[in-house]
Image 1 (cartoon, rainbow, N blue to C red):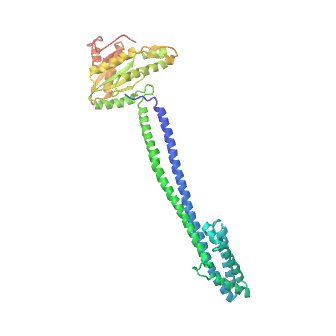
Image 2 (cartoon, one colour; image 1 turned 135 degrees about the vertical axis):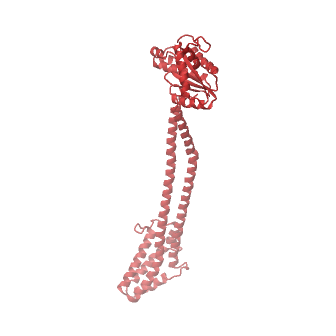
Image 3 (cartoon, rainbow, N blue to C red; image 1 turned 30 degrees about the horizontal axis):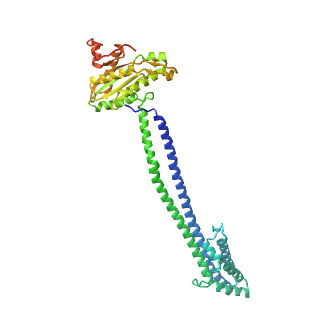
Length: 419
């Protein structure tokens, strides 16, 4: 018999809510990690670009210091305007680059803050590159002058600029140390960002694995459960929680195909229109639920039971003979007759309704068509109604009754009067 489905819709709604929240959580986590990875990747690209710019500018300072000394020597020998202009341009670029490295420059894409290691080179007592650079620029400016002061400046400039790189006291050594410090700082920065990028990727993979185990798998189970609920709802009668006609025909046909011998019962509530007319449709619905509930107690879990019409029910009993099927139908009829239906909840007064049923029974072998057997059981039900209701009749008995070969007082037909 179909399991009760009164709570199917609330469970379905809860499952839908769970799926919605789960999808939002999964997408939110993936989105957050993707955004983090995007930011880190952008930071790596920016750091690489900034590193290239800073290292290029600081490395150019070494070259410019040598170039300024060479141009100053050329100007000292020629005193031509063109050599002087070249010298002045080189000094201007050297000074602008130094200011950009120390203070930052948006035009040159240089950061405003020096790393601690570089700051120590520019402003520390050991190398004091900022002061020495400014002194170098001042001497270079004087070398552009004509006369003895310019010549003196040239010789001083040459002495400053032509020091050995290996000499820690030389200006060139300090410039080279700044280049190395810039390069080391940015290499460290990029390494840190790449570690963060790797960490973000690991977190992303872990989040996917955890999301799959904690969210996606349960979500798939919920989807499967929802599909099962939908399937159940599609074959369930909402009033009685028994199978509806579609579900009864599907599962009844499956049972007949697999069981060696089955019996089909068609059950109808007697004088149901009178119940509706006297007590109202709400009371009639209560009587339908009442009979369905009693039938579920009589039939086995392996049997198929459903509501196939307004006040009509069907049952397919597996592995039973005709005699057994008739006994089951008699037991159901007796239980219904002896258990009045309580309609006080809908009438708002103490009231019960005596209910009886008529049952038609037909048996079939494996592979028989359910539709044909139901027609036989329905024919027997029709004859049971004609014989006075509140009785059980098999298809064979109904045929004999039609031909006048069967008496309603036979043990196969029980009657205790109309409802």
